[in-house]
Length: 258
Image 1: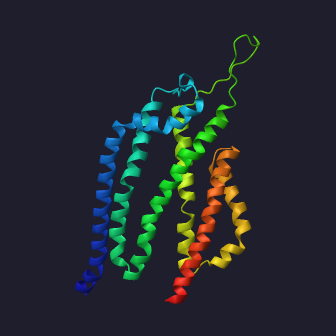
Image 2: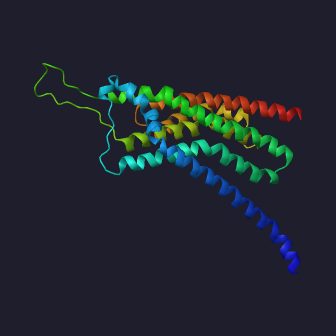
Image 3: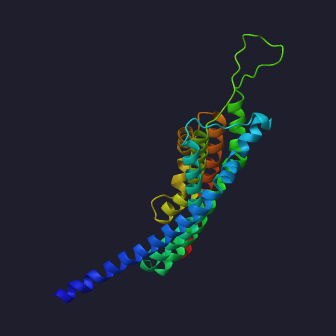
């Protein structure tokens, strides 16, 4: 009786030991990357701030401030952590895959593996859209509210100058990157739902108008309150929704032929 219980408990213990080993290696990789990225936090932050510097036009006016003695220190920690998480995501994903893959059938592994590869690629693509497309336009829009006094102007003129805080700027940039990165997972999510038989291409096509409205509402929630960022997120979302319909149709055709 004791031997039977031991045989039933051993697989669970082995899984827990394997999970602990995978988590340990993932944490070690994250800590090593964090130590490296923290040393280059200033350069990484400068890279993130480059669209803002270019939006100012005159680099002499491009300034970011911090109003607390510890603010820049914690900003560097956050920059190092986010950069380390980005670098080590393939390692963490690999350990996660090696943990769950043995419990899957061969056909299930063949289905999930492409999604695990394409998902970070789409996330990175969303980040590129933010950095090179949305941020330059959004920052120029926000900086247009400055009112700089001209020589020989009205003496009672109130000069309004943008002095962004480093912590607020980093939070805004990370929020935009994560919003677009998650938004670009739409084809992955809908394709998995179609493969599971939860949705169909016809069902997605019939609800296109509702999806467009929902995407604009979601863009308004996830992005700053400016029309540039909201349209910049909603339009790619609509394109990704159409791509999801095409993927669902392809999945249905392959299912019919098999």
